[in-house]
Length: 365
Ligand SMILES: *Cc1c(COP(=O)(O)O)cnc(C)c1O
Image (tube, rainbow, N blue to C red; front, side, top):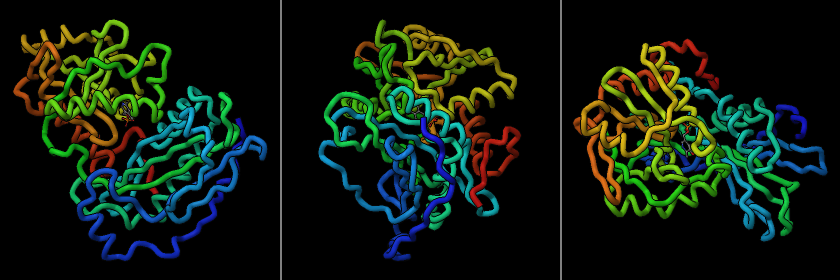
């Protein structure tokens, strides 16, 4: 593990930034992940040069890679997803960025990649938000989505951890995550598995997403918004959606969410909701829940709400569940009271509309 370089970033403003009119058009209707800001952060790693070096924020541009770069062959790649939110006074702020930095290093450990000091990770994100703050979307509920990522650049075809890497951060103005903008989503129970015990399910690595594309396409083709993965061994225990964690709300005021056993991604939204729910006086259990029980509880009315959560879509109600051999609706099929309440609370904290007793919000000037 290399020492952290100084937190001094070379700042190279884009020589030909997007014209103001084109930027205004882009941020008026950004969608999700389609429009990118003018700059990016780059930090290089070379084990032979003492680790991380040359942090800089400069023009967003293509990257030259050797065709033998090991990421192209053995997929040493990890990423994070986080957002900057606009506060009541117009300042931009990050939500729990240290949690993203810590998870990034946990993913790095699993993928045999070097750690990046947490304060360097957070400073990299701050640098980009600062230089591209004019890319904040001009839409209700908009945010600036930030994508820190790292990949192996060493030209070497032997199978071992690379000795050279790049860490980058790019930014993308974001509107609403779900294409339909639906108040409750419909999910498809996949026959495919996302993660096996001992695998990489808890790491935020591109390969997990590559493996989820076929199941997700199947869910879309059947008219659903998202794919649900069950456990790989018994194909019975509920794990998570393609990119969101799940919560089950019962009529006795208790809530359950699948435990972090290594096959699901430890969401920061999940962790935040656990804390908020407990503060609401609700009993929260991290406990396995199986699909048979889910269907039975939905039918009996014991299960009143299901929430899906993640940075991209925040908190969303799951209204409808279907699979090869079952189909059922939760409650009225629309968003329930607790989903709405917790969503408003979390969004309120993120946007500075309500207090932040946990110190989750980091203003970026
Ligand atoms: C990123 C991700 C989540 C959500 O994590 P957040 O930190 O809440 O954004 C959930 N599941 C998967 C598979 C993910 O990649």
